[in-house]
Image (cartoon, rainbow, N blue to C red; front, side):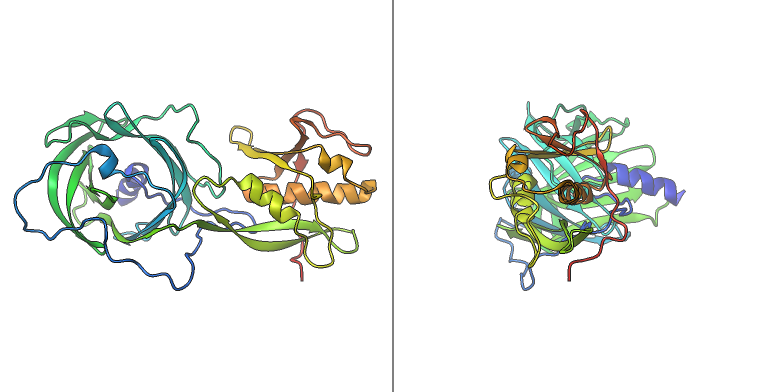
Length: 371
């Protein structure tokens, strides 16, 4: 029965997920903040429990503030996946994409504030890459908080559970501080989840408990907030070896602030060859777009025409350049299917031509690290 409860928990906890990591070589699902950083003292308004009576409730944008480059860490209890940390991938108006990392996986969720409600409108697990989903056509509409902000306001969520505001001034103490918080309770047939939101900060605590097993409880509590913090990710970049007989890779740390696209990062790094090797992209070549189609699990990289016009290579070396691009993109998106296009058209040069939708099959086995 505990296993059933645990699966329900994973599907419903606001920001925590726990799938196993199946990343290919070079995947980096759990970046570590820079050495030497310290959790700041609470600066966004924690209060001491026991102060005067209930205050006026804050608004949705205060209970779920949308800010760039904020890194939040949560301590966990009751399950190995309860601890997690979050980064802000993208922010567009009242819509935000948050990356959540726990010991087992990386997931992303998109939230928006619209028509008096905070809604989770997109969620995807096993997302180790950067891609903007804030402008997607959303089918999910999971209401997290709904106005009016008053005790007793309730609504039904997708699985039939009831979610309601059960307190607007709850005394909550977490490692980061003590707060007067909004309490939102989700009650299903066999579980209860309580989420707590502090004005100016957002989620500070989540509690899961089972109705069927009183000793089964999981919680996550805010322990630190760092502002102006990017997401750091290790990526493998592939280059033809010095003898032009195969490929080598070099792993590099990439820094991504809120709103940064991976396109520019890949372009920059593929132009910087290790000592003694040739860059994969010419100085004038642009990476116009990289993306992955989740329905086909095929990644696409679209290059400017300079890639072909600037190339001075025979078929053997051109083949290695294409393999280097495909290996880099495929490893990043964790797929062995990569399509290379030139300004939105199928790749065609004097040596190679591909049909529309045709992809290169990537194989990272036996590719050595550059020494």
